[in-house]
Image (cartoon, rainbow, N blue to C red; front, side):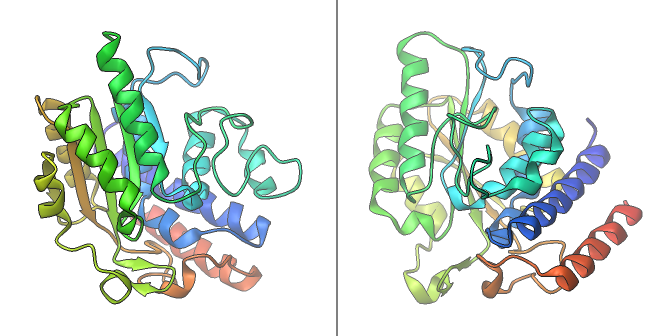
Length: 276
C-alpha cells in the first residue's frame, strides 16, 4: 500500500473501533484510536504475515502490551482478513471470539494473551530472544502505553533486551499523555521516556506526530535498519484521534459511545475519509 491508501485504511480502522465499542457498550476507544496509524502500518505494510496462515512459524510477531486497547487491534485484524468483520459487533460478549483483552486461544492473528499491564513487553522480549537463539529471521513488535511504562516489569524486560542487543525487537510507546486517572505527568510521570530507554541501551526514535503516516513509515524503516540494539519508537499521539468529542479527553479512556455519540463519531470519520 502507498501512504495515501494507508491513511484511508487507518480511518477505516477507526470506524471499526467505534462499531465494536458501541455494540459492546464497553471497551477502550481512546487509546485504540490514538494507535490506529501504528496498527495499520504494522499489519498492512511492515510485518511479514499471512492471514491465511496465522500460525506460520516464520511470521513476524506482534504483542499488544496495552491489551485493553484490543478494539484497535481487532479492527485491524478484521480489515486484514484474519476473521469476518461481523465479529466486531460481538466484542466482549459471552462466547465471543473477541474478548476485552487479546486471547490467542480464540482469536486468529493474536500472538500473545495480554491484559495485565507491563507483562506483554516481557513476552515480546522472549520471542525476540527465541529467534536469536534459533537462527530465526522473524521480527517482534510490541505496543505499550505511556501509562503502562510506569510498571517496573517493563524496565526489567528493557534491561534484558538492551543487554542482549536484540535488534530484532521493536517496541512502540503510544505517548498520548493520558492514562485512566489523568495526565501521566500527574499520576506518575515516566518522562523523559526517550532518555530512560537510551539508558537501557535502546536505539530511540522520537516521532513528533504518531498519527502522521509518513512519520510512522520513516520510524519503522529506521528501526528495521538498526543493528546491534533493540529499537523503541516513542510517538506523540492524540488520545481519541479522529472523533471530535473524544480527542485529548481522559474520560474516553474506557467508555463506549452511546447511540448519538456513535452517530456523531461516524460522521466525523466519514468527513475525514472524504477529505482523504
